[in-house]
Amino acid sequence: EKMSGHRLLLKDIHQIFETTWTKIAGDRTDIKYAAGKDFKVLFMLGKDLLSAWYNKLPEDDFRVLAIEEPFTCNLSDIPVPIIGAMDLVEEDDSGTVIITDFKTSARAYSIDEVDQNQQLTFYQIAAKKNGFADREILLKFDTLIKTKIPKFEQYWTTRSDIDERRLITKVKQVWDGISKQVYVPNDTSWKCKNCSYKKACDEFLEGDHDKKNNR
Picture 1 (cartoon, rainbow, N blue to C red):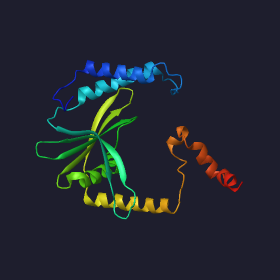
Picture 2 (picture 1 turned 90 degrees about the horizontal axis):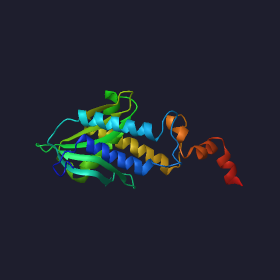
Picture 3 (picture 1 turned 180 degrees about the vertical axis):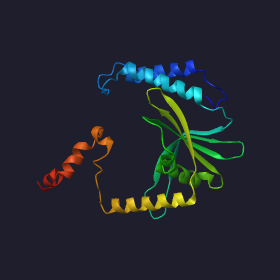
Picture 4 (picture 1 turned 60 degrees about the vertical axis):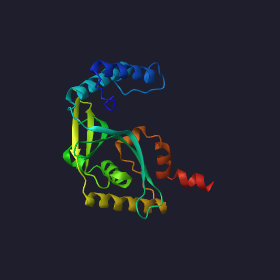
């Protein structure tokens, strides 16, 4: 809508969300909700989050360049490309490119978390390799925070050439490990509980993987 020069009313946004949420999640028996959550509770939370976003989102004159913009780029010494998609790419009157990633979070972010986030560093590297090498680039998270009273926060940050080089060095080391089949499961993550690979990971760590391969 912004690309078309329009600004939706909050009631329009709520209606779009209600229609989409009902179509995707309504009457679904395969969705496992967390304790105390269900279709209606999350519907109300979604509306409250959108209200917080709508009421706090600053007015700006940024020109929308792309939405859900896919990208691919190659890093030196790595034979496979880095692929991804940027949620929102805009530019201001001075020609500065603004790359936004939309997030939901259970809590507010710290400055260090934003400044050290590798995803945003990747976005800058990709932007430079895909036509914006001569432009100043700003990065930000637009974050819906799922606290008791829902909040919306924007976190702005930048990346230096040193930040890019540090990340590229890490990527090279990871690729070297992958090439040598060095796989170290991260079984201490909070994501483990609902990970679709948990069974395979447990079998690998407990030796069942080797037993099956030796049969």
